[in-house]
Length: 311
Ligand SMILES: [Zn+2]
Image 1 (cartoon, rainbow, N blue to C red):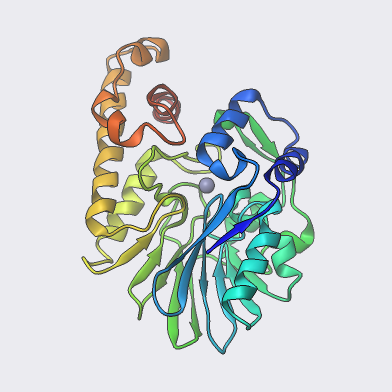
Image 2: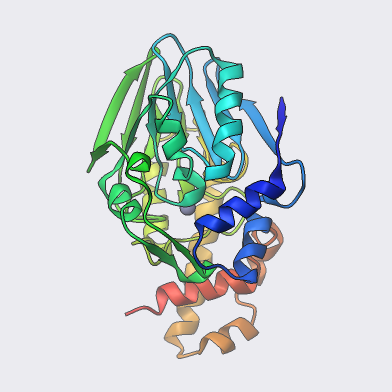
């Protein structure tokens, strides 16, 4: 099932929402979010279980449907939320009742206001509300996002966890410390054995890390190892970006992150400058599998170098 909508207009509008951007950031957006790269981008729908569905757009939105109303995870970018709401209405006749944000980034919480206007209640970690309330800077993407409207802010926040008993499911939304940002939420559908990791997991590509928002490669690895201890070989894992995976694939991603971290750490410990590190292509062993998405090898090496060389 696919939905077509006007990608060009979306691009204009999204740029209006970003007060400063660069050609570099724009290129990154097109690479990461192919929805912007073509005139007629698509929403792809993937059924995970009878009532859990992934809607793939700029990130992976998930809906749990049923007579109690829809429980939704993430609201995409501002200009994708209308087609997403339309798509949801095609899948279920019930209203959206609750929405959990996995973190504050615009491609996950950007549709909050319109989604909330349907009558849904938005829940997120307390740091998501704090960050959405103020201007946020992402130096790596040369991007500044302005404070969100009051209507877009999560109406309910939590510090550790909250569980939804809805549609016969137990959906535990929890924070296990900083990872991709300082406000990450993981959603575990315990009965279905399905888990949404948000941007702790970019499946098949080097990840963006919110190093200006409390995230780091070390905390992504640490959070990931905690997750590994909570899941089993039958668990279906929904990443923030990329296709649905299993435990073995997620473990491989964490091995890549650990390998990259160690490779860059060694160079920093040897006193190498960023330029010297980039010149030796430290991530070569990982590039074939992970370097063809959001970040090239050099860009990801720079992001991790910047992260690890911070005082
Ligand atoms: Zn993110």
